Image (cartoon, rainbow, N blue to C red; front, side):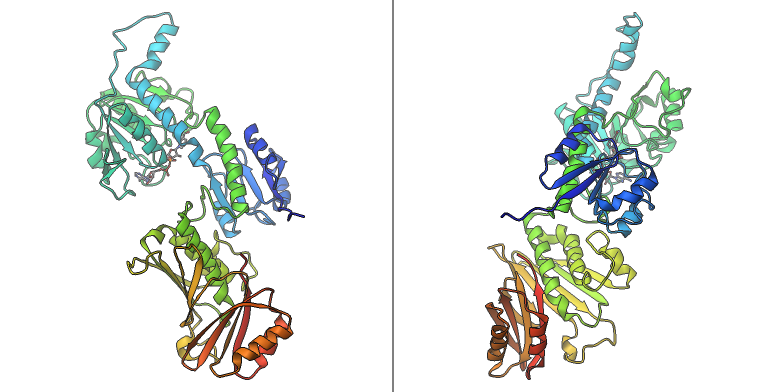
Length: 546
Ligand code: NAD
């Protein structure tokens, strides 16, 4: 009989597009629980019976709801903003929070572009005149996009998508994004600036694609308007408040700003009598950026797919609270994440005196982007056996910090190590030394590599050198390096009925380390018997999986 797959219970706690619900129902390992519109108490009572929860903006996911998370592992926001989810509480509980920003990138970029075109061609007021029975060709003469310079503020997903479209329309594009360290982007076609004030004088049209935070709030204001070209056009489909609305009105009055198009507002909706609704050179839409049928379908399907990918162990998409994790690992980075897990599990039984400091050395320029995930995966495997609290890649750094465990990840390149190398070193608290281990060996150290055959290899454990693929049931024996030891070990395993499939022996000083691959788990009693034999210094077993 084929093994049965686990069933993941997915709680739809908001009204989701039909496509998203149908997607969940079509998955053989997923069970849909569609319960939008419950109260906080009702969600708090049932949330722990589900593996995943999908929300839009209609529910507040509070600390109270997450207080007893049970089997809840992931919350997906079908959409972008996660202001309605208590991220701190989710992180503390080890619950991953993801959003589906990707799904609305093109839709929002198209809206910003549509606003820009409509603004420069007076589409809105011209239509208004026609609808009122008029016909005024002279009044609505517009401006051509081709040949103008577009200034993109925030060169992330949407900013770049807008820029690509502007280039196709024959515009010049400059961009400001202090978090992009490059002189040009999009194959040299976009000049980058790291100073907003330096960029604005170059642009005929400014379009904003930044998050709203202290650095971006009111970034276009009276002072920065003064640096702009006379008659500059402004588009904001990012967040209300990025453009100072009062200063914008003044710039429109003075003619400094020839026109502005806003999809987002400081207060949404703006008051009925707001001047923002009426100015003849303002074009407004009611926060429609992500509002297309395609995007709404995509966000609900993407949210469900992201939950299932995480639950199935296939990866993390769109993480919001995984702080610094690179989500899209290259195949090689993924192999090193897997190697990190195996290495940490291998040395975990050797850590008997606690952990004060973990140092992880990641060598290889292709691995740099995966270093954070490698670090977290190694830490999880080192800590999970010692803690009763759930620990996972989301909360592991916080858990380590809370316990005063120092974590240091060092990245470097070394041409002599093609394919890279990973080292994990664990130091115990001062004074907590292992009396059975020489002073030089108190730090537990394991080194691994992935070769061209893509197999994970361990090449060193505590300065014993070897070349071994860490999989399945394994055992280590540290013994005095003298005749007869292999025989003793073989006899004990034979007597316990555990077949040794493979064995590596490494020697140094007057000791040897045997690393055994077994066909079955080594029972505790066997390990205890081994440890009692003269000449055997240590024995431990670990199960690594495939
Ligand atoms: P993103 O994270 O991919 O890109 C944001 C970019 O802004 C990043 O490259 C970042 O480096 C840059 N940035 C951050 N701080 C900055 C600063 N102080 N100055 C300049 N650049 C800075 O995000 P995205 O998906 O492209 O979304 C961009 C904005 O669009 C967000 O505010 C998002 O909320 C908004 N949005 C609006 C709608 C809508 O309905 N109108 C829909 C989706 C997204």
